[in-house]
Image 1 (cartoon, rainbow, N blue to C red):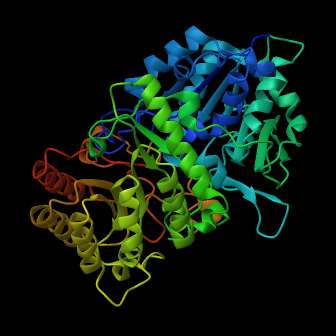
Image 2 (image 1 turned 180 degrees about the vertical axis):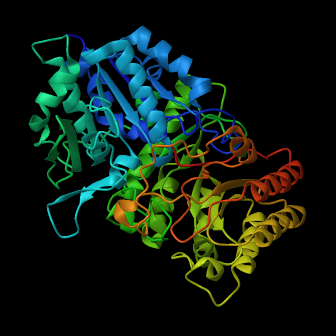
Image 3 (image 1 turned 90 degrees about the horizontal axis):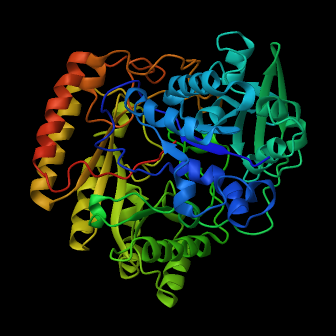
Length: 532
């Protein structure tokens, strides 16, 4: 049979407009990455995927990949896609705060399509709640593991047919093949559950699990991540639909060095820290891969948006791991073969100050925007930050030095602020005032992304919180309204050892943030952020 597929990024919240000012990307970036191998097979007209609904143009393929923000606002779009495509395979990507949205989307798909659709959950939440015990082959299920929740009866056993943890480029492809080659077309769910053991040969560091009559069944992939050939860039397979203010509203690709999703630092609250991911970035060949993706982005923009210029944001946690050698290699390659793309990336405060010459060289090959994680006004007040490597000088003084340097170099700067780390309300309000003063002095930061710290599962490094994440992070419209200027936020899942936010304080912060945004109306609201 001809395989039909829909892929979605699950909604963060049940209703409201929270996140619209900062989560401005219209492309489900993590979902693109997870589906690249399968989409490449479809584009080559290879096997089962070559006969699927993904075998057309990238624009046609993109129509069956949905980024949902709010369940209330986007559920009609989701149900319309299910009704139009009638998929055999529904892929759902979710961060921890998206789990209630993923459950609700799965429920609606099951009601509409029964067991004719196989529902597969993946993404950050699955990867942080299902993992191997350190130094062991034993698979651990955190309290928030969707598989554990199904086995315990807290979720219906058929909510998800398979839950996938980790990274495996070919696993989505193999799951589609199980359905496409099944003898019985009527039950895609049964084909995936019964054939799950046949995925064991797919290379990669991953775990796939399902539940049958309360019993958990697991398949663990090989640790080898080798593949026959590099995968095409996401933009070549799915196109580019995002635009960012900081790039003059030009089509903006999300590009990767494909060096792994881990950061070189290990901040305790971060999902990209080494403890949560389990590995450091692999930088061999990273500069070459990144140059290739930038060049592809330029080609795609020229083909699909011929009157526009090309832009890109590099999604590495830190640009090329912050490695001077890798950055120098990238500059050398980009000078020899200019990619023709204006781009932005992420650095830490101390990396900017220690690598000023490299940033000037990056400007010569297209760098125009740097996003920096400021997080707080004083790292020691919240227990420290792994990335605070030069504490001899005050944190805010270093951030101001970054703004002064970037401004002098003609580089736009955005900052990320993270409340809920243990600071008091007065320090929050003072930080917003400092940001306003900096804008007056330096015209920067041009973008500010506010978030409230959420305790993620972090492969068990969660201070014993053991949240199940079954409830929406913002329980009512009062909280949703108060957190409207924020990106990620929760009233229910504070960091271990931290207090729940107070509604009155968040409402006060919202007023201060809105005043800050009015101080720079030309750029307020644009931000670059990680999707599910």
